[in-house]
Image (tube, rainbow, N blue to C red):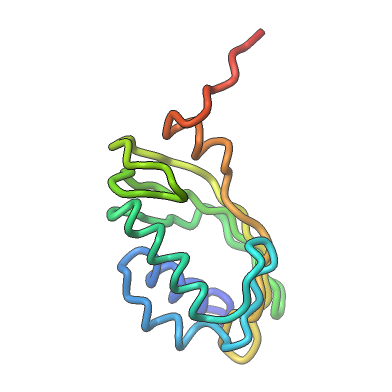
Length: 136
């Protein structure tokens, strides 16, 4: 297993289990989350905590992972049941299955930075917040 694969496995384990102490090992203190606009391990933990509160059965499955030196690209599927408030949206009880794409950099056994994100359109339509587009 490459350094990047080990780091990402640790991060996804933290997301899937809620064991956020793993992030102290696998995420650098100066971690930069470019797409979400924050820096550091603590805001990352807060983001995961918020999603796990909204989706207690939150689970990330790695569909594709490419690594090249200190760089990685991944495509994942995120599933869960909406049982709590999410960004002001009350629980719907609906199940989601959405895609995410991430590109990042790993150095010295820790995630240093990331770009990417999840398919917000799919999330909002699956939760019924916005209507799905109709073929026209």
